[in-house]
Length: 542
Image: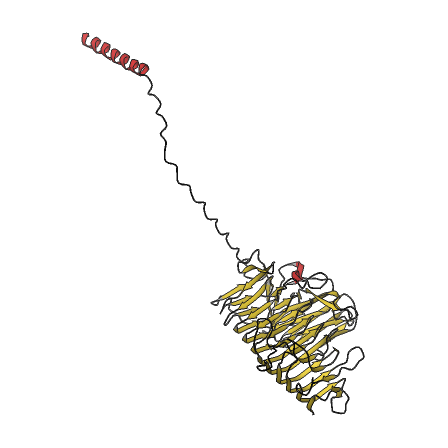
Protein backbone atom coordinates (compact mmCIF):
# COMPACT_ATOMS: atom_id res chain seq x y z
CA UNK A 1 0.00 0.00 0.00
CA UNK A 2 2.87 2.32 0.86
CA UNK A 3 4.51 1.45 -2.48
CA UNK A 4 1.37 2.38 -4.40
CA UNK A 5 1.12 5.72 -2.55
CA UNK A 6 4.76 6.56 -3.32
CA UNK A 7 4.28 5.80 -7.05
CA UNK A 8 1.16 7.97 -7.18
CA UNK A 9 2.92 10.98 -5.57
CA UNK A 10 5.89 10.60 -7.92
CA UNK A 11 3.59 10.62 -10.96
CA UNK A 12 1.80 13.76 -9.77
CA UNK A 13 5.04 15.64 -9.21
CA UNK A 14 6.24 14.72 -12.72
CA UNK A 15 3.08 16.05 -14.30
CA UNK A 16 3.34 19.31 -12.38
CA UNK A 17 6.94 19.83 -13.43
CA UNK A 18 6.11 19.28 -17.11
CA UNK A 19 3.21 21.70 -16.96
CA UNK A 20 5.39 24.39 -15.44
CA UNK A 21 8.02 24.05 -18.11
CA UNK A 22 5.36 24.41 -20.85
CA UNK A 23 3.97 27.64 -19.39
CA UNK A 24 7.08 29.38 -18.24
CA UNK A 25 9.50 28.81 -21.13
CA UNK A 26 9.74 32.14 -23.05
CA UNK A 27 8.90 32.21 -26.73
CA UNK A 28 11.84 32.15 -29.12
CA UNK A 29 12.51 35.53 -30.70
CA UNK A 30 11.31 35.96 -34.31
CA UNK A 31 14.01 35.18 -36.81
CA UNK A 32 14.87 38.30 -38.83
CA UNK A 33 14.15 38.16 -42.57
CA UNK A 34 17.19 37.14 -44.53
CA UNK A 35 17.57 38.84 -47.89
CA UNK A 36 17.33 36.38 -50.80
CA UNK A 37 18.57 36.51 -54.38
CA UNK A 38 15.88 37.92 -56.67
CA UNK A 39 14.29 35.36 -58.99
CA UNK A 40 15.28 35.45 -62.63
CA UNK A 41 12.50 37.15 -64.56
CA UNK A 42 10.50 34.62 -66.55
CA UNK A 43 10.37 35.08 -70.33
CA UNK A 44 6.84 35.66 -71.52
CA UNK A 45 5.31 32.52 -72.94
CA UNK A 46 5.14 32.36 -76.72
CA UNK A 47 1.57 32.93 -77.85
CA UNK A 48 0.14 29.72 -79.12
CA UNK A 49 -0.79 29.61 -82.77
CA UNK A 50 -4.54 29.46 -83.00
CA UNK A 51 -5.68 26.13 -84.28
CA UNK A 52 -6.49 26.35 -87.94
CA UNK A 53 -10.14 25.76 -88.65
CA UNK A 54 -10.75 22.63 -90.67
CA UNK A 55 -13.24 22.42 -93.49
CA UNK A 56 -16.72 21.47 -92.38
CA UNK A 57 -16.94 17.72 -91.94
CA UNK A 58 -19.54 16.59 -94.40
CA UNK A 59 -19.48 13.48 -96.50
CA UNK A 60 -22.19 14.95 -98.69
CA UNK A 61 -24.55 12.04 -98.31
CA UNK A 62 -27.45 14.30 -97.41
CA UNK A 63 -26.76 16.89 -100.11
CA UNK A 64 -25.98 14.69 -103.13
CA UNK A 65 -28.92 12.78 -104.55
CA UNK A 66 -28.26 9.86 -106.89
CA UNK A 67 -31.19 8.45 -108.81
CA UNK A 68 -31.36 5.56 -111.28
CA UNK A 69 -34.09 4.45 -113.66
CA UNK A 70 -35.81 1.14 -113.00
CA UNK A 71 -34.16 -0.41 -116.07
CA UNK A 72 -30.75 0.88 -115.01
CA UNK A 73 -30.16 2.65 -118.33
CA UNK A 74 -30.41 6.25 -117.12
CA UNK A 75 -29.12 7.86 -113.96
CA UNK A 76 -28.58 11.35 -112.58
CA UNK A 77 -26.91 13.13 -109.70
CA UNK A 78 -28.54 16.22 -108.18
CA UNK A 79 -26.92 18.64 -105.75
CA UNK A 80 -28.26 20.89 -102.97
CA UNK A 81 -26.90 24.40 -102.50
CA UNK A 82 -25.22 25.07 -99.13
CA UNK A 83 -27.50 28.02 -98.42
CA UNK A 84 -30.82 29.41 -99.53
CA UNK A 85 -28.92 32.62 -100.41
CA UNK A 86 -27.86 30.95 -103.65
CA UNK A 87 -31.22 29.74 -104.88
CA UNK A 88 -34.51 31.27 -106.00
CA UNK A 89 -37.97 29.95 -106.79
CA UNK A 90 -39.26 33.34 -107.94
CA UNK A 91 -38.78 32.99 -111.70
CA UNK A 92 -38.36 29.31 -112.47
CA UNK A 93 -39.03 25.89 -111.10
CA UNK A 94 -37.04 23.03 -112.61
CA UNK A 95 -37.43 19.28 -112.22
CA UNK A 96 -35.70 16.23 -113.67
CA UNK A 97 -37.12 12.83 -114.54
CA UNK A 98 -35.58 9.58 -115.75
CA UNK A 99 -38.86 8.03 -116.91
CA UNK A 100 -41.03 11.05 -117.74
CA UNK A 101 -43.30 10.25 -114.78
CA UNK A 102 -41.47 10.78 -111.50
CA UNK A 103 -39.86 14.21 -111.25
CA UNK A 104 -37.15 15.37 -108.83
CA UNK A 105 -36.66 19.01 -107.96
CA UNK A 106 -33.57 20.84 -109.21
CA UNK A 107 -32.39 23.83 -107.22
CA UNK A 108 -32.33 27.01 -109.31
CA UNK A 109 -29.21 29.04 -108.56
CA UNK A 110 -28.78 32.77 -109.16
CA UNK A 111 -25.97 34.82 -110.71
CA UNK A 112 -25.58 38.34 -112.04
CA UNK A 113 -25.24 39.63 -115.59
CA UNK A 114 -25.05 43.19 -116.90
CA UNK A 115 -26.02 45.18 -119.95
CA UNK A 116 -23.79 48.11 -120.91
CA UNK A 117 -25.69 51.11 -122.21
CA UNK A 118 -24.74 51.89 -125.81
CA UNK A 119 -25.28 55.61 -125.33
CA UNK A 120 -23.38 55.79 -122.01
CA UNK A 121 -20.25 53.64 -122.15
CA UNK A 122 -19.26 52.36 -118.73
CA UNK A 123 -22.74 52.41 -117.24
CA UNK A 124 -24.67 49.20 -116.70
CA UNK A 125 -28.02 47.76 -115.85
CA UNK A 126 -27.57 44.59 -113.82
CA UNK A 127 -29.91 41.62 -113.94
CA UNK A 128 -30.37 38.39 -112.03
CA UNK A 129 -29.87 35.34 -114.21
CA UNK A 130 -30.33 31.70 -113.22
CA UNK A 131 -28.78 28.28 -113.66
CA UNK A 132 -29.29 24.61 -112.81
CA UNK A 133 -26.49 22.08 -112.47
CA UNK A 134 -26.70 18.28 -112.57
CA UNK A 135 -24.96 15.15 -113.90
CA UNK A 136 -26.59 12.44 -115.98
CA UNK A 137 -26.14 9.56 -118.37
CA UNK A 138 -28.67 7.94 -120.65
CA UNK A 139 -31.70 10.17 -121.24
CA UNK A 140 -33.42 12.66 -118.95
CA UNK A 141 -36.45 14.94 -119.19
CA UNK A 142 -36.43 18.41 -117.68
CA UNK A 143 -39.69 20.08 -116.72
CA UNK A 144 -39.17 23.84 -116.54
CA UNK A 145 -41.89 26.26 -115.51
CA UNK A 146 -41.56 30.03 -115.79
CA UNK A 147 -43.73 32.39 -113.77
CA UNK A 148 -45.14 33.85 -116.99
CA UNK A 149 -46.20 32.32 -120.25
CA UNK A 150 -44.42 33.40 -123.40
CA UNK A 151 -42.59 32.23 -126.48
CA UNK A 152 -39.86 29.81 -125.40
CA UNK A 153 -36.47 29.54 -127.10
CA UNK A 154 -33.74 27.09 -126.07
CA UNK A 155 -30.27 27.70 -127.47
CA UNK A 156 -28.00 26.62 -129.07
CA UNK A 157 -30.74 26.30 -131.68
CA UNK A 158 -31.42 22.82 -133.07
CA UNK A 159 -29.43 21.09 -130.35
CA UNK A 160 -32.32 19.99 -128.15
CA UNK A 161 -35.85 18.60 -128.42
CA UNK A 162 -38.56 20.34 -126.40
CA UNK A 163 -42.25 21.16 -126.28
CA UNK A 164 -44.10 23.91 -124.41
CA UNK A 165 -47.62 24.10 -123.06
CA UNK A 166 -48.65 27.21 -121.14
CA UNK A 167 -45.86 28.14 -118.73
CA UNK A 168 -44.21 24.72 -118.77
CA UNK A 169 -41.62 23.23 -121.11
CA UNK A 170 -40.51 19.60 -121.38
CA UNK A 171 -36.91 19.30 -122.58
CA UNK A 172 -35.30 15.95 -123.42
CA UNK A 173 -31.53 15.54 -123.25
CA UNK A 174 -29.39 12.56 -124.16
CA UNK A 175 -26.02 14.32 -124.30
CA UNK A 176 -24.19 16.60 -121.89
CA UNK A 177 -24.04 20.28 -122.79
CA UNK A 178 -24.93 23.84 -121.83
CA UNK A 179 -28.14 25.56 -122.87
CA UNK A 180 -29.97 28.86 -122.48
CA UNK A 181 -33.72 28.73 -121.74
CA UNK A 182 -35.39 32.03 -122.62
CA UNK A 183 -39.00 33.18 -122.32
CA UNK A 184 -40.33 36.09 -124.33
CA UNK A 185 -36.88 36.92 -125.69
CA UNK A 186 -35.47 37.70 -122.24
CA UNK A 187 -31.72 37.05 -122.54
CA UNK A 188 -30.85 38.51 -119.12
CA UNK A 189 -33.34 36.79 -116.85
CA UNK A 190 -32.81 33.49 -118.64
CA UNK A 191 -32.10 30.04 -117.19
CA UNK A 192 -28.74 28.46 -118.03
CA UNK A 193 -28.80 24.65 -118.02
CA UNK A 194 -25.53 22.95 -117.10
CA UNK A 195 -25.99 19.27 -117.92
CA UNK A 196 -22.78 17.43 -117.03
CA UNK A 197 -21.65 13.89 -117.75
CA UNK A 198 -21.35 11.66 -114.70
CA UNK A 199 -17.74 11.41 -113.58
CA UNK A 200 -15.88 8.86 -111.48
CA UNK A 201 -13.62 10.28 -108.81
CA UNK A 202 -11.82 8.75 -105.84
CA UNK A 203 -12.08 11.29 -103.03
CA UNK A 204 -9.59 9.27 -100.96
CA UNK A 205 -6.85 9.28 -103.58
CA UNK A 206 -3.39 10.47 -102.54
CA UNK A 207 -2.67 14.19 -102.81
CA UNK A 208 -6.39 15.01 -102.99
CA UNK A 209 -8.21 17.72 -101.07
CA UNK A 210 -11.90 16.85 -101.12
CA UNK A 211 -14.39 19.56 -100.22
CA UNK A 212 -17.88 18.12 -99.89
CA UNK A 213 -21.14 20.08 -100.06
CA UNK A 214 -20.94 23.21 -97.93
CA UNK A 215 -19.71 26.80 -97.84
CA UNK A 216 -15.93 27.34 -97.64
CA UNK A 217 -14.28 30.64 -96.79
CA UNK A 218 -11.42 32.06 -94.73
CA UNK A 219 -13.39 31.57 -91.51
CA UNK A 220 -13.73 27.81 -91.73
CA UNK A 221 -11.26 26.42 -94.28
CA UNK A 222 -7.63 25.98 -93.26
CA UNK A 223 -6.46 25.99 -96.88
CA UNK A 224 -7.59 29.57 -97.51
CA UNK A 225 -5.13 32.35 -96.68
CA UNK A 226 -5.77 36.08 -96.63
CA UNK A 227 -3.23 37.74 -98.91
CA UNK A 228 -2.56 41.45 -99.18
CA UNK A 229 -2.86 42.87 -102.67
CA UNK A 230 -2.23 46.61 -102.78
CA UNK A 231 -3.75 47.01 -99.35
CA UNK A 232 -6.75 44.84 -100.08
CA UNK A 233 -7.12 41.57 -98.20
CA UNK A 234 -8.12 38.76 -100.54
CA UNK A 235 -8.85 35.12 -99.66
CA UNK A 236 -6.68 32.80 -101.75
CA UNK A 237 -6.64 29.01 -102.07
CA UNK A 238 -3.17 27.95 -103.28
CA UNK A 239 -2.93 24.52 -104.88
CA UNK A 240 0.48 22.87 -104.58
CA UNK A 241 2.21 20.84 -107.29
CA UNK A 242 0.65 17.47 -107.93
CA UNK A 243 -2.34 18.16 -105.69
CA UNK A 244 -5.97 17.74 -106.78
CA UNK A 245 -8.58 20.05 -105.30
CA UNK A 246 -11.97 18.40 -105.74
CA UNK A 247 -14.89 20.75 -105.19
CA UNK A 248 -18.01 18.62 -104.94
CA UNK A 249 -21.37 19.56 -106.36
CA UNK A 250 -23.18 21.59 -103.71
CA UNK A 251 -19.87 23.07 -102.49
CA UNK A 252 -19.20 26.81 -102.74
CA UNK A 253 -15.66 28.16 -102.42
CA UNK A 254 -15.39 31.88 -101.65
CA UNK A 255 -11.75 32.37 -102.60
CA UNK A 256 -9.53 32.88 -105.62
CA UNK A 257 -7.75 29.68 -106.67
CA UNK A 258 -4.05 30.16 -107.46
CA UNK A 259 -1.87 27.61 -109.25
CA UNK A 260 1.65 29.01 -109.35
CA UNK A 261 4.99 27.36 -110.19
CA UNK A 262 3.16 24.03 -110.26
CA UNK A 263 3.38 20.81 -112.20
CA UNK A 264 0.44 18.43 -112.38
CA UNK A 265 -2.15 20.23 -110.24
CA UNK A 266 -5.87 19.70 -110.84
CA UNK A 267 -9.00 21.65 -109.94
CA UNK A 268 -12.04 19.44 -110.45
CA UNK A 269 -15.62 18.80 -109.43
CA UNK A 270 -19.11 20.16 -109.83
CA UNK A 271 -18.87 22.90 -107.22
CA UNK A 272 -18.95 26.69 -107.50
CA UNK A 273 -16.23 29.30 -107.10
CA UNK A 274 -18.25 32.27 -105.88
CA UNK A 275 -16.82 35.80 -106.15
CA UNK A 276 -20.00 37.84 -106.31
CA UNK A 277 -19.07 39.56 -103.04
CA UNK A 278 -16.19 41.31 -104.87
CA UNK A 279 -18.52 42.71 -107.53
CA UNK A 280 -19.46 46.34 -107.03
CA UNK A 281 -23.15 47.28 -106.80
CA UNK A 282 -22.98 49.56 -109.85
CA UNK A 283 -20.87 47.00 -111.78
CA UNK A 284 -18.00 49.47 -112.20
CA UNK A 285 -14.41 48.95 -111.09
CA UNK A 286 -12.21 51.16 -108.96
CA UNK A 287 -9.08 51.03 -111.11
CA UNK A 288 -6.85 51.69 -108.07
CA UNK A 289 -7.89 48.41 -106.46
CA UNK A 290 -6.96 44.85 -107.41
CA UNK A 291 -9.70 42.50 -108.44
CA UNK A 292 -8.98 38.78 -108.15
CA UNK A 293 -9.45 36.36 -111.01
CA UNK A 294 -11.36 33.24 -110.09
CA UNK A 295 -8.58 30.90 -111.26
CA UNK A 296 -4.99 32.04 -111.82
CA UNK A 297 -2.46 29.73 -113.49
CA UNK A 298 1.09 31.10 -113.74
CA UNK A 299 4.46 29.55 -114.56
CA UNK A 300 2.89 26.10 -114.43
CA UNK A 301 2.48 23.04 -116.61
CA UNK A 302 0.33 19.92 -116.90
CA UNK A 303 -2.67 21.61 -115.25
CA UNK A 304 -6.31 20.47 -115.43
CA UNK A 305 -9.44 22.49 -114.66
CA UNK A 306 -12.53 20.35 -115.04
CA UNK A 307 -16.25 20.67 -114.28
CA UNK A 308 -16.16 23.77 -112.07
CA UNK A 309 -18.74 26.58 -112.14
CA UNK A 310 -17.44 30.15 -111.78
CA UNK A 311 -20.01 32.58 -110.39
CA UNK A 312 -19.33 36.26 -110.98
CA UNK A 313 -15.56 36.74 -110.81
CA UNK A 314 -14.44 40.33 -110.42
CA UNK A 315 -11.70 39.86 -113.03
CA UNK A 316 -10.85 37.01 -115.41
CA UNK A 317 -12.65 33.71 -114.99
CA UNK A 318 -9.45 31.80 -115.85
CA UNK A 319 -6.18 33.66 -116.34
CA UNK A 320 -3.02 31.95 -117.58
CA UNK A 321 0.50 33.29 -117.90
CA UNK A 322 3.77 31.64 -118.98
CA UNK A 323 2.18 28.21 -118.66
CA UNK A 324 1.91 25.13 -120.86
CA UNK A 325 -0.07 21.94 -121.24
CA UNK A 326 -3.25 23.26 -119.61
CA UNK A 327 -6.59 21.53 -120.19
CA UNK A 328 -9.89 23.26 -119.42
CA UNK A 329 -12.91 20.97 -119.74
CA UNK A 330 -16.61 21.44 -118.93
CA UNK A 331 -16.06 24.73 -117.12
CA UNK A 332 -19.10 27.00 -116.82
CA UNK A 333 -18.72 30.71 -116.05
CA UNK A 334 -21.11 33.64 -115.67
CA UNK A 335 -19.67 37.14 -115.17
CA UNK A 336 -20.94 40.73 -115.15
CA UNK A 337 -18.05 43.03 -114.18
CA UNK A 338 -15.91 44.80 -116.83
CA UNK A 339 -12.79 42.88 -117.95
CA UNK A 340 -14.21 39.56 -116.82
CA UNK A 341 -12.74 37.59 -119.71
CA UNK A 342 -13.57 33.90 -119.73
CA UNK A 343 -10.30 32.24 -120.72
CA UNK A 344 -7.59 34.89 -120.99
CA UNK A 345 -4.00 33.68 -121.44
CA UNK A 346 -0.65 35.32 -122.18
CA UNK A 347 2.59 33.77 -123.41
CA UNK A 348 1.22 30.24 -123.08
CA UNK A 349 1.50 27.12 -125.23
CA UNK A 350 -0.21 23.77 -125.70
CA UNK A 351 -3.58 24.80 -124.32
CA UNK A 352 -6.90 22.96 -124.68
CA UNK A 353 -10.37 24.36 -123.97
CA UNK A 354 -13.33 22.07 -124.60
CA UNK A 355 -16.97 21.42 -123.68
CA UNK A 356 -17.18 24.72 -121.79
CA UNK A 357 -19.57 27.66 -121.40
CA UNK A 358 -18.41 31.25 -120.95
CA UNK A 359 -20.85 34.12 -120.47
CA UNK A 360 -18.76 37.21 -119.83
CA UNK A 361 -18.71 40.99 -119.85
CA UNK A 362 -15.56 40.94 -121.94
CA UNK A 363 -13.90 38.50 -124.31
CA UNK A 364 -14.96 34.88 -123.85
CA UNK A 365 -11.63 33.60 -125.25
CA UNK A 366 -8.57 35.87 -125.40
CA UNK A 367 -5.11 34.76 -126.56
CA UNK A 368 -2.15 37.13 -126.26
CA UNK A 369 1.64 36.98 -126.35
CA UNK A 370 3.81 39.13 -124.02
CA UNK A 371 1.91 41.15 -121.45
CA UNK A 372 2.75 42.34 -117.92
CA UNK A 373 5.12 39.81 -116.32
CA UNK A 374 4.36 37.22 -118.97
CA UNK A 375 6.92 37.14 -121.76
CA UNK A 376 7.00 35.08 -124.91
CA UNK A 377 5.03 33.68 -127.82
CA UNK A 378 1.77 31.70 -127.75
CA UNK A 379 1.24 28.55 -129.79
CA UNK A 380 -0.65 25.28 -130.13
CA UNK A 381 -4.24 25.93 -128.97
CA UNK A 382 -7.26 23.70 -129.49
CA UNK A 383 -10.68 25.14 -128.63
CA UNK A 384 -13.61 22.81 -129.31
CA UNK A 385 -17.29 22.26 -128.53
CA UNK A 386 -17.84 25.43 -126.48
CA UNK A 387 -20.77 27.80 -126.02
CA UNK A 388 -19.75 31.48 -125.93
CA UNK A 389 -21.80 34.51 -124.89
CA UNK A 390 -20.23 37.98 -124.71
CA UNK A 391 -22.53 40.51 -123.10
CA UNK A 392 -19.80 42.94 -124.12
CA UNK A 393 -16.69 42.73 -126.35
CA UNK A 394 -15.89 39.60 -128.38
CA UNK A 395 -16.44 35.89 -128.40
CA UNK A 396 -12.87 35.23 -129.59
CA UNK A 397 -10.12 37.85 -129.43
CA UNK A 398 -6.54 37.10 -130.55
CA UNK A 399 -3.49 39.36 -130.85
CA UNK A 400 -2.95 42.86 -129.54
CA UNK A 401 -0.42 42.71 -126.71
CA UNK A 402 3.15 41.84 -127.68
CA UNK A 403 6.81 42.48 -126.97
CA UNK A 404 7.10 45.47 -129.29
CA UNK A 405 10.46 44.09 -130.43
CA UNK A 406 10.69 44.36 -134.23
CA UNK A 407 13.86 42.23 -134.47
CA UNK A 408 12.50 39.42 -132.26
CA UNK A 409 8.71 39.53 -132.47
CA UNK A 410 6.33 37.32 -130.53
CA UNK A 411 4.44 34.78 -132.59
CA UNK A 412 0.87 33.62 -131.98
CA UNK A 413 0.41 30.50 -134.09
CA UNK A 414 -1.24 27.14 -134.62
CA UNK A 415 -4.66 28.04 -133.19
CA UNK A 416 -7.53 25.64 -133.99
CA UNK A 417 -11.11 26.62 -133.12
CA UNK A 418 -13.84 24.13 -134.02
CA UNK A 419 -17.51 23.39 -133.27
CA UNK A 420 -18.42 26.59 -131.42
CA UNK A 421 -21.85 28.09 -130.70
CA UNK A 422 -21.75 31.85 -130.26
CA UNK A 423 -25.11 32.80 -128.74
CA UNK A 424 -24.65 36.54 -128.21
CA UNK A 425 -22.03 39.18 -128.97
CA UNK A 426 -22.83 42.71 -127.82
CA UNK A 427 -19.79 44.76 -128.78
CA UNK A 428 -20.91 48.18 -127.65
CA UNK A 429 -17.47 49.80 -127.75
CA UNK A 430 -15.52 47.18 -129.73
CA UNK A 431 -16.21 45.23 -132.90
CA UNK A 432 -16.17 41.69 -134.18
CA UNK A 433 -17.48 38.39 -132.86
CA UNK A 434 -14.20 36.80 -133.97
CA UNK A 435 -11.43 39.38 -133.94
CA UNK A 436 -7.76 39.10 -134.83
CA UNK A 437 -6.25 42.47 -133.98
CA UNK A 438 -2.50 42.62 -134.28
CA UNK A 439 -0.25 44.92 -132.27
CA UNK A 440 3.12 45.04 -130.51
CA UNK A 441 5.08 43.68 -133.53
CA UNK A 442 3.29 40.32 -133.22
CA UNK A 443 3.08 37.78 -136.00
CA UNK A 444 -0.30 35.98 -136.17
CA UNK A 445 -0.29 32.93 -138.40
CA UNK A 446 -1.60 29.44 -139.09
CA UNK A 447 -5.09 29.55 -137.56
CA UNK A 448 -8.34 27.83 -138.47
CA UNK A 449 -11.93 28.56 -137.42
CA UNK A 450 -14.34 25.81 -138.42
CA UNK A 451 -17.95 24.80 -137.78
CA UNK A 452 -18.97 27.96 -135.95
CA UNK A 453 -22.56 29.09 -135.54
CA UNK A 454 -23.19 32.73 -134.61
CA UNK A 455 -26.78 33.25 -133.52
CA UNK A 456 -26.60 36.97 -132.75
CA UNK A 457 -23.75 39.36 -133.43
CA UNK A 458 -23.57 43.10 -132.96
CA UNK A 459 -20.88 44.50 -135.23
CA UNK A 460 -18.74 42.54 -137.65
CA UNK A 461 -18.92 38.76 -137.67
CA UNK A 462 -15.19 38.51 -138.43
CA UNK A 463 -12.66 41.31 -138.13
CA UNK A 464 -8.95 41.20 -139.00
CA UNK A 465 -6.94 44.39 -138.56
CA UNK A 466 -3.93 46.04 -136.92
CA UNK A 467 -3.84 48.07 -133.72
CA UNK A 468 -1.17 50.02 -131.91
CA UNK A 469 0.05 48.30 -128.75
CA UNK A 470 3.33 48.74 -126.88
CA UNK A 471 3.89 51.77 -129.11
CA UNK A 472 3.82 49.83 -132.36
CA UNK A 473 1.52 47.96 -134.71
CA UNK A 474 1.66 44.25 -135.37
CA UNK A 475 3.91 42.81 -138.05
CA UNK A 476 1.89 40.24 -140.03
CA UNK A 477 -1.40 38.27 -140.18
CA UNK A 478 -0.95 35.20 -142.36
CA UNK A 479 -2.60 31.91 -143.34
CA UNK A 480 -6.00 32.10 -141.63
CA UNK A 481 -8.92 29.85 -142.64
CA UNK A 482 -12.63 30.30 -141.91
CA UNK A 483 -14.72 27.25 -142.83
CA UNK A 484 -18.38 26.30 -142.35
CA UNK A 485 -19.34 29.46 -140.50
CA UNK A 486 -22.81 30.96 -140.34
CA UNK A 487 -23.64 34.35 -138.82
CA UNK A 488 -26.91 36.12 -138.18
CA UNK A 489 -27.40 39.85 -138.20
CA UNK A 490 -27.93 42.19 -135.26
CA UNK A 491 -30.57 44.87 -134.92
CA UNK A 492 -31.49 44.68 -138.59
CA UNK A 493 -27.97 45.38 -139.87
CA UNK A 494 -26.08 42.70 -141.72
CA UNK A 495 -22.88 41.61 -140.00
CA UNK A 496 -19.94 41.84 -142.34
CA UNK A 497 -16.33 40.76 -142.59
CA UNK A 498 -13.58 43.34 -142.21
CA UNK A 499 -10.04 42.63 -143.48
CA UNK A 500 -7.70 45.63 -143.28
CA UNK A 501 -3.90 45.59 -143.42
CA UNK A 502 -1.98 48.56 -142.05
CA UNK A 503 0.54 49.41 -144.82
CA UNK A 504 2.94 47.79 -147.29
CA UNK A 505 5.07 46.42 -144.44
CA UNK A 506 2.21 45.25 -142.23
CA UNK A 507 -0.09 43.18 -144.37
CA UNK A 508 -2.75 40.49 -144.15
CA UNK A 509 -1.80 37.62 -146.43
CA UNK A 510 -3.52 34.33 -147.26
CA UNK A 511 -7.09 34.37 -145.92
CA UNK A 512 -9.57 31.64 -146.94
CA UNK A 513 -13.36 31.85 -146.62
CA UNK A 514 -14.80 28.38 -147.24
CA UNK A 515 -18.58 28.07 -146.99
CA UNK A 516 -19.03 31.16 -144.84
CA UNK A 517 -22.56 32.61 -144.84
CA UNK A 518 -24.10 35.74 -143.34
CA UNK A 519 -27.88 35.77 -143.13
CA UNK A 520 -27.91 32.86 -145.54
CA UNK A 521 -25.82 34.70 -148.12
CA UNK A 522 -22.57 32.98 -149.03
CA UNK A 523 -19.42 35.07 -148.74
CA UNK A 524 -17.82 35.43 -152.18
CA UNK A 525 -15.65 37.97 -153.87
CA UNK A 526 -18.72 39.62 -155.37
CA UNK A 527 -21.10 39.23 -152.41
CA UNK A 528 -20.22 42.62 -150.99
CA UNK A 529 -19.88 41.08 -147.52
CA UNK A 530 -16.11 41.53 -147.24
CA UNK A 531 -14.64 44.97 -146.62
CA UNK A 532 -10.93 44.96 -147.45
CA UNK A 533 -8.15 47.31 -148.42
CA UNK A 534 -5.07 47.11 -150.61
CA UNK A 535 -2.97 45.69 -147.78
CA UNK A 536 -5.06 42.52 -147.61
CA UNK A 537 -3.70 40.04 -150.16
CA UNK A 538 -4.41 36.54 -151.44
CA UNK A 539 -7.99 36.22 -150.20
CA UNK A 540 -9.57 32.96 -151.37
CA UNK A 541 -13.30 32.17 -151.51
CA UNK A 542 -14.63 28.59 -151.67
